[in-house]
Length: 127
Image (cartoon, rainbow, N blue to C red; front, side, top):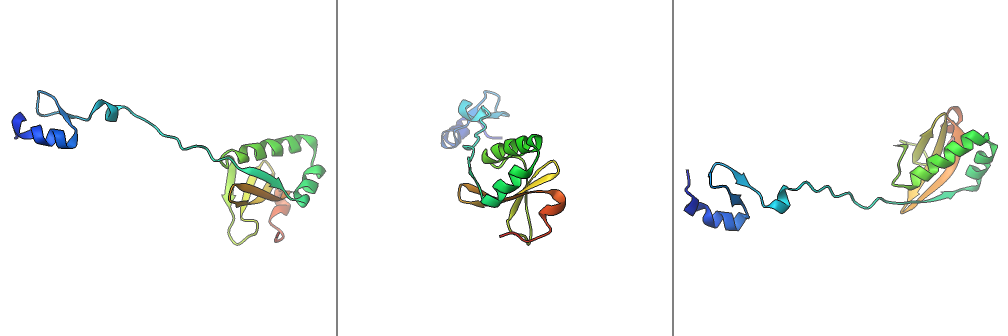
């Protein structure tokens, strides 16, 4: 076991503060505090293609409100039930109840191509 004088150089080098009882090492106070850094939330711009607007107009008003609220959440760091689709264009879908919002992400823009009922959403390829 090393004595306190032998650890003095190590203490300065590493920045550890040693208790008088040599068995316990403590980090400096600024390292002991738990600091959680949350990166800035990414915000996206929502762009609706003309077909998506047509799809949205055909829906009942309560469903339209839910979808618009879901799109608002989607703009805030892609929050919601978002899933990447495999072998399908557009690449992503947002699930809102029985409806699917099919979209792509280009830089900081979410481009919404279609808003369809779940039974219709994956039947055809969309471009």
